[in-house]
Length: 70
Image (cartoon, one colour):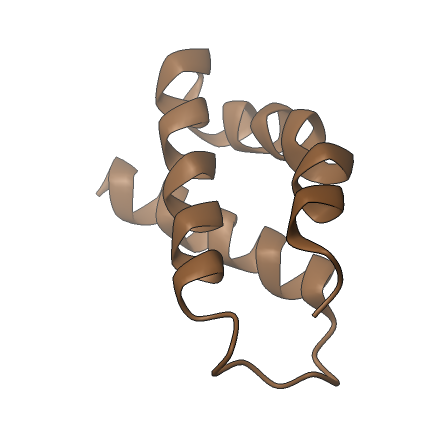
């Protein structure tokens, strides 16, 4: 995986904006994004190194938002 700190700094604000489009609340969006970052960080050694991290990250956020809304 890419350096996790760099990945976080690069994508955090965009991810919160993306999640806010689903859940409408910025605080809920921030919580969802933090949960996804934590999930990725905890499993970083298990995930495929050839994985498109950005696509996986945003798909995970979308799915977490949809779970939150249901």
